[in-house]
Each structure stands twice: as structure tokens, then as C-alpha cells.
Length: 283
Length: 309
Image (cartoon, rainbow over all chains, first blue to last red; front, top):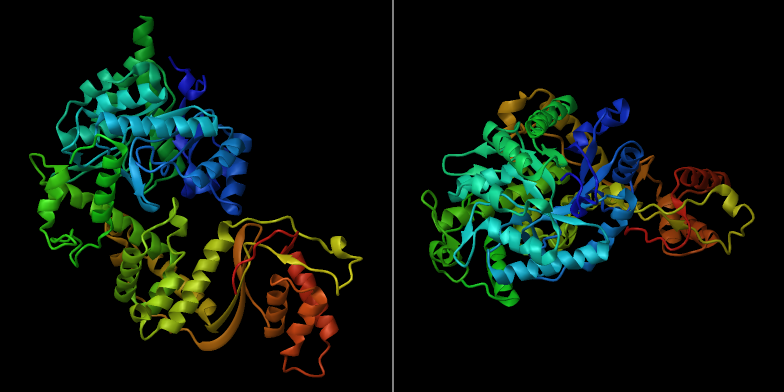
């Protein structure tokens, strides 16, 4: 099920995050890349170099927007100014869908610039779903919500993370950006089976997949996006592809960023798992 | 803590955010006491579940540390000049004090330093004895943020104003253009700082140093303090590259008057009134300035909102 309502009925392949250290290479060499994911907030500006680069990229490539500051799970109402700026960017990029995180990060106009975990309760699922619906109606583009890596859980939680994700996307009638690495990180930090998570989310709502690297510390794992994808995450990715089908997949690499070719080659490894799965299905 | 309504969710989020916004201890740990004197361990245990490896306090502390490392790193990168003026330790104390008083009020880290000038004016103690040069540097470095990505309005070309009469003509300035009157040569200083930092960075062995916090990555190569000197500066962009250009006092006064809405004729009169230069060919000089500014695209159609002086 590659194309579905949650990714605008597109059939994108393996994408890369558009990052500053690669601008020059991409603009000069024009490498073949299925699509680029941009961080929306980096381009929600009024002028200057960021928009010049974006326009050059848009001339050559398909671009999908990924946000980090919408904070669907915030108890506060959505920030209208933020939405207006985002809509201006949506019109510029013509993104077929956009994504942001299943998290909160601001209170009363004060921003943590972090993707903070939700208490998994029915009330917070309703609040989150209401915010997602409001954003989608205003932006007029399909939305996928991404599961985040987390390092803490709340006493008040009433369900598992995957139950909460399912509840939110059903209430909001939106898609899922399934971050396989985040599931792995959280599974280690909270002692759950990541495959149980994968098996129990609504597969028909997955519009996109994220993969990334992480860092292990003595007592927890941090989602650092500064390494190649680790083997257990590739295995989970293979399982996810089996469940949801060939789905637009993006490698995130945000720190200690190596050369463009290195990042691209790492991302293209995903094809092996997709093809293997596809061949199995044909056989 | 139960979360059965939007208001209970808000209460939980406000509490957690307040814990994150509290500065770390000198050893980069979460503070052991809450605002009301209670043990922070008890406060964290109220709403964070422990696991088999980490206590509630330790789990919350991960977020507290990540928050502070992120925002401090951001200002560390955005204010290399201020950092060099104050020295690393004083700079880190200042920005910690700033963020404790003024947490981010914007969805983008781009605006994180937007109230730094206000903060230093309110609490100059953080920059003493360098508060005056620190203020100049903050204004200069913020002007660069503005020049990088503030909007550009359609430029006015010489043809647009060919037949206009100077006593009626008003010109607007681009929103991304900042005009600064400074008491220190912070522009020269920043160039020297950048050169010294790039020299240091070139000699770094990549992997080892990048695993360390930014504040400890760079060697402290001393750059001579900014000269005490009146400087008039335009901070702008051209072809989306950032530039700063020194202006003569008369030119600066003309631009300020134009920015404030005076006609071209009035602006020129204001600019020259303050000049000490006599027997000078002002007509030719002013023509050259206007040509320069026009070719740099500084004049734009009305409705612009140029930045402060």
C-alpha cells in the first residue's frame, strides 16, 4: 500500500533530509535522489538565502515538509501565526503531505525546542487529535504524525504508546510517520517489545517511514541521528515494510553529518529490504 | 498526576516545562531543590515513572540537560563576538541568566537572542565591566540575524525615481537593512575573532573534539579588545550574502532620516547640518552615495519596516 490518502496518494521512494552541509554538492552536482525532506521551520522565513536554496531545490526535486514545532500534543491551542507561515511554505513547496511529531513542546508561548513525550491518556489523545484536525483543515494537506523517542513516562498514562498513537490517528483520521528508530530507542528506554509496537499500529495509515542512527549510553539510548542505521533498526525496518508495504522512507542524519554520498548510500540500503520483501511476496 | 482533561494536561505540561527551564547546576546536573524548597526528587516522582535503571529524577534530568545544551549551543554559535568580548565563562553565565529570565518565545531558535539587548539594558551586571561594548556587539550580531533572512521588498531602481522631485520624494529602506551607531569597532573585532576561530577549527582533529560540548571545543586564542571608536554601520545582504559596510556620519544621518520618513531633500539637509566638513563638494558626494545605496538594493517600495538604529 505505497500510495494512500495520508501521503497524498504518492509513491515516493527513498528520500534524504536536506541539510546545510550538502547544499553546495546538491546544487552543483544535482545527484539523483527520489525526494528531499525539509525541516519546515528552517524555511518559514521571509527572505534571504534559505528561500533561495529551497527554490533551487524545488526546480529539480520533489520536497516533503517535516515539522518540529507544531506540538500537536500541546494543551494550548495551535499558534495561528505559525500555521499561517506554514501554509505559505506549503503553497511554495506543494508538499503532497506534511508531518510533525506526536509530542508537545511549548506552554503559554514559552518554547522548549524539544519533542516532549505525551501522557498516554484518552483525554490527551482527544486534545492532540483536535489539534491535528485543526491544522489539517487550515493547511489543506494530509498530515502524518511521527512517534518520538522518549526517555520518560508519566504515572498518569493509561495505555501503551502504540495504543495511544492508534487512538490519536483514528480520532484525527490522519496518517502515521512511523519512525522505526524511535520505536527501537523507546523500547530500550521503557522495556517493551518493539515488534509488538510495529504489529499493533494501524498499518493502512502509515504514509511514511523514518530510519536513523542513535547513541547508546550506560542506562539509556539517545536518539542522536549522528550514526549510520544500526542492525536491529534495519531488521525492524524489514518487518515494518512487510506489514505496511513499500512506503516512502527517509534517512535522518542531523549531526556529525558525513559527505552527501555517504548519507545517500546509507539511505539506499533501505532498498535491499524493500526488494527482498517484494520478491518474497511475488514468490 | 491524572490527565483526564485539557486543563489537567496543561497543568502537567506547565510543571514539566518549568522544571526544564530551571538552569542546571555548575556540574550540568538538575537542581536538587524545587522552587519552593522541596526535594526535586520528590517533585519528579509526582509525575514521572521510574524504571529499573533510572529514577524519576534521572529521567526528568535527561530532558533538563538536553534543553539547556540545545539553547546554550544555539546562542554559543550565534554570538561569537559577544563570547569573545566577555570570555567563555562570563558569556555562559550571561546567556544562562538571560534564558532563565527570557525563555524562548518563538517556535524557531533563530529568534532566541532577540531579547538579549533588552536583558543587558535591564541587568548590565552580567556583562560588567564590558557592558557598553557587549551592547554594541549584541546589536551588531542581532543585525546579522535580521540581514540573513528578513524579507526583501521590491527594490526601487534609478528609473523609478528619475522624474521625482527631491522635496516630495520619500524612499523606504529594506527591512533586512539595519543601521547601527556604535561606540566600538566591533565589526573589525568580529572579523578578527572569526579568523582566529577558523584557524583553530582547521587544526582540530574532527571526531575527538566533536564528542565534547561546544564550550570546551575551541582553544581560547585571545583577540585584542574592540577599539573605542564611533562607528556607523549598515548591516545588509546582497545576492543573499551577508555584508556590513561602514558609513560616513553624514551618510548615516541621511539614511536614518529616510528611514524615519523624511523626504530626500530633508534627509540630505539633516545629514549635512551635522557635518563638520566645510568647502566640500557635497553634491557629487551625495549623488555617489545614492548611486551606491541604490545599486545595493537598499531602497524599496513603501510598506517596508526597516530595523532600528
